[in-house]
Image (cartoon, rainbow, N blue to C red):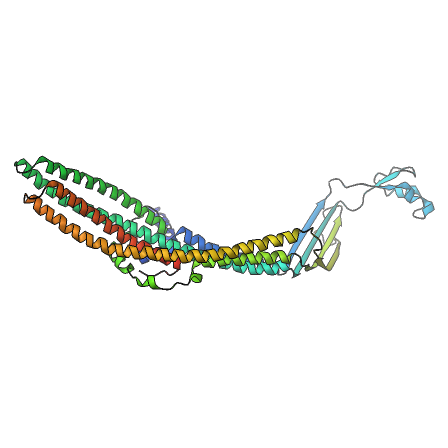
Length: 468
């Protein structure tokens, strides 16, 4: 019994950190959920945060920088220097006798005046503790870097907007594909039920000798085709569900009920007013991204030009040195020698053999290319918007056309079924009418999906997402 509290705690811990997966979603709820949980949308949001950090990182390079350093050295074998013995001749007035100098030498053994004496300078151990303060006073590339960081943040935000639009469109497509598969399964099951009933009745009539065997075989062929399509639709429905789960950012095997239906979404999306609306290309995300590219190329040109300007910085250094043959640096009587310095560093570019000029010209060429790319992007966007409007208008018109065709196909199939069982129609005519009805049913479902998808495509291009 003592393990039960621990078990409850473990279950609570796991549940608290598990992803909260909704049991049902409308299309708008699915879009809102995906914008928060889709992997690409979350990474795009992280890119914005990374851009903000990079902006501060660039800004901080021009602010005061303080660094400290502690260096400890212990010579396992100290370096020996050689001094000429003649330098210590008493005739030079440095010391009275060479023997007096030899008492200070490394090994104490006399050397002839024309030779050298080994001597060790310094102590065996030393510590150097120092700190430095530096401040950038002027740097042209730093000023350009501040502008570039701001542009990079704008690029990240525009990329996030583009990702959100793409995620929204992918969720709409995935949601519609699930509804299409579900509707197909329902229609096929209904058709199979009706056809099975017709086949049973026709079989009885044939067994009584009032109908040809071909009529039974025709219905069997149609039923087998419908059963095959039903099995395939069920498989596609499972795949569509998994794709939808991935699109909204949940486990691909999650079980989520979709509350909207295909027909209601189609009716909400039929609005030909969007076709006659004037669209400002400069407000689209694609145009903004191309404009960002042009601006970044202009900043790169300024950066190359700024490299010809001098760079000025100031510094302040200070520290202490400690020397000893033993490790006594923590003793109170340890002597420390302080030092400090203040100064400026001025770097002046003078001559680079044309390297800076070539880099500047290359940056200017890239800027001209970016200007042409922006112009081409504007023209392509105008073309894409017109194409998307045309596709949306066709999908809407085709929906109404297929809706009328379905009503006609239903009446034709009903008439042929009545004629067949009354003995004045052939099985071939009945099968042809049924096949025509089945095609019309699938076509109306596809046109519903086309209306929803083409509307979503138009809204993605024009950056005008609507609510469902």
